[in-house]
Image (cartoon, rainbow, N blue to C red; front, side):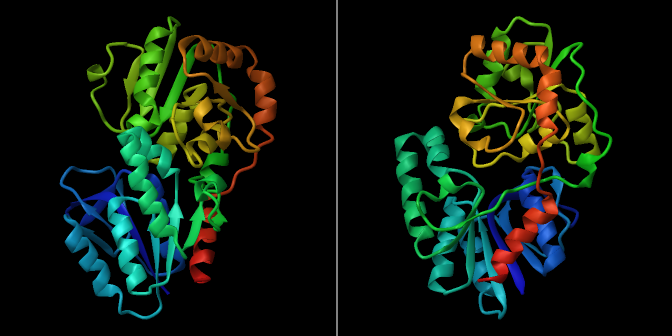
Length: 338
């Protein structure tokens, strides 16, 4: 079985190697290739991306027509299946093409596009996504990381993960001699990072706030010397060390399906703060605290965690997490059943 992964991921090329910024796309692609021959389709960009994708066959196109043509060219092959990741303009038209060609297709909905498109584009964004969702999901095979994302459609819920055995090694409890807060994720409006920076600026407390994400010049957004940006970290051991060097993790997103960085933080025994908009993602996980999106409530939550860490630590240790290997294995099983 040949697996064709259809994404709108921006992929750069350098000396015969391919790179992207989305670690989940990289993980899914590489792990699925361990089960069966896998080809990744994405958008070609000149701006250099960070994570090297260890895969022999990658098809990238710089416009929608070449993108669709590259998919069409392999559609005649036997024993092939398609995994479409997320609903975007590119993947939406790809799904329509695959429906016309009557190809075996599995759609993976990673987040609530209704909320994301609304946050980005307002009401018109919600309408656009509603059209995408209605047409793309009709009579389709669906998997997702959260039941609410399906909006009443039938589909399989699969818990995502980026965790390897390394996240279980040499785990130590946090030290609170100085407050050190961490965010790992994309620098986008819907991720709430810019509104969080403004909140951090208002909190007059001796602390550090570190951002691990897109490599940006933080002074364009803030002159607060307590805030620093590390850029994207692709080395797993370095990323684990970053978690270990901080004592609280915060995820300020306005919308989330299931956040793997929360599992990363909790696996390193770091408490997590989220805001009310995404409290539905907590599930059975212990050590996650919900704050209102304002200075006073955020500071109170930070102070509570700092003062009660030992009690919180007992709860965090009760958590158990799925591995990256098991996550992709579950995707592969659903592809095999098409």
